[in-house]
Length: 472
Ligand code: ARG
Image (tube, rainbow, N blue to C red; front, top):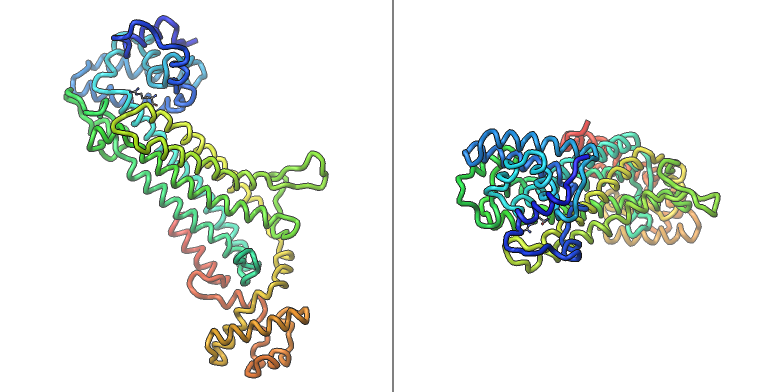
């Protein structure tokens, strides 16, 4: 089993920063200082960064090609050990950078000690963390595109399905289920835009900034930037090691995205409730109760609804860590990772579970139609008719339509069920051509304005969204 044994740990500690120390840190110092329990998640990025750095050092002849080869093969072996679960992580070695460097020294000896030339853990950790967040942003984009695809498919299948649209959670106007789902396709599109923006600004390499001021060695930061897929090296070494904007931008975008998912989750909870019954969720995304045999609880949706708690918390937490922090690196910045990891995990599972529920949910047309028989969802259509056909000013038409609604409510009728006589008793200019216009289907079909709920318009916007978001 690969090990960072005690002797080599002590040796490395003293060789890394122990020169002026006569004894080791207290246990408490180690406990508060160590980040290995969580920053081990950066191992792949740490190894990629070190390989790029070693290749650059060899290219500019700061180390020999033989040393560079030894470093590369040692790092490859460490990657395999970690992936196989054979690597023993040591708290005494603080973090992923020193754990890997220590093991490299065990494996290849002297060349390992040359790797840290013209580099500091300050630029190393900034590089590792950026690479990790960049991979994360790419996987989030895929997950969001998958969710958009699931919504587009459902929306297409139900572009004609009528349901009430709500404002204030009160019945407002008839819409279609497909139309409602398409609102989320747009929200997720803006989320993807925010993550893509964050990725663009993130993509400058901190590597080679060294501790804070650059280095006196003839390094080539452009070379390492290119090798790691960055667009360019970060232009100011002090900024490069102090910057955590990329983490903040991920968290801010994640916070907004999680709020979108939470709004959708709340709609799923409402729609699947006994009172609404607009959708059914299957056994796959619900749980039972330990005491009430009849229950089917939308736990997955409720958990998605709750995830912004963590994610907004992580954003707030990191903003507070960085607020007032003087340049350049301060150990405070080690507190940047756990919140990001936790937010990434929370967003990842929320995205996957929500996409699962979108595939899984079955709309219940009867319940949706039944809900449209209360709340007078076509009252606006009646007012619009009076404007269009009778030339009334909208405010006046609104008033007359309101009076007709009051009369219908008193009679216990839908607007559609009101006789022509009853309508004309309130507004004598109403003509027989009103008949049929007050049904929920004609009300929805009439809303043909760009982005409106008319089924043909919804279908046109679905086709357009597939193009815009490159989703087939
Ligand atoms: N574990 C540290 C972190 O995550 C690495 C950087 C340490 N740098 C230092 N100057 N002590 O921030």
